[in-house]
Image 1: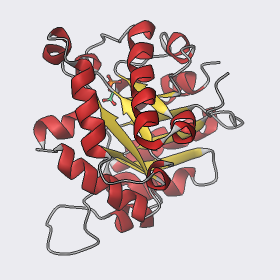
Image 2: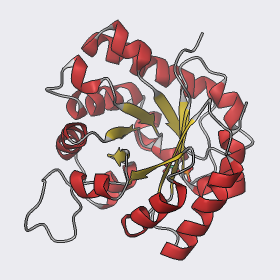
Image 3: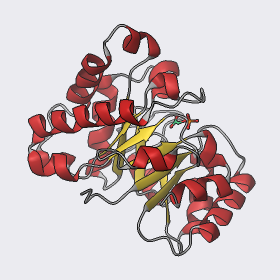
Length: 252
Ligand code: PGA
């Protein structure tokens, strides 16, 4: 039996103005009112965070950032600290998304520092990992995930990682309409859970939530969530629409 509470998160990426963000978030809060069996999070752009938080704070919708820098403050033009994200109402932060790795030079080392900074500031990290199509075709999926997880969580104690949420996002499935089959997702999620058990013990592995991400839609969420090691979803495109995202949240 799955004892982990499902977690459905929306990653809005670089979409929506402030007004559009507030409108979608408000609509979503109404649509999911009464949902208590799923944790719901949306990650708007930095600039809309505080406004979106104000709009949903009385609802079950929680807010997260799409990235942070690891320093508390300083001369780091263009960056946002964990404290700043928290002050805008964030409880979560997405770290190491493949788009950040691909376009903004995010490395396993910077991911590690950001996860630590998040934990130290009571933000729950949603730690993203995943292989590219080339890596999968070369049978390298498990090696890549092993490296990303070991480096991302290097130097952490079981206590440190107990709040961490993992998000398996095969890069070839992001924004492509190509979802991993539920069998492919389960195979990888099981691998991740076993690795977490090796690194941090059975208790942490048993309670760690592992999300799937990559072209999740109302049409495929139920099948994905029926897998024993899939505990939720990180949704991009389909989360931009309040109705679609609410349907995903209410997958049961
Ligand atoms: P997608 O994006 O749902 O649009 O494929 C997922 C993600 O990047 O988190």
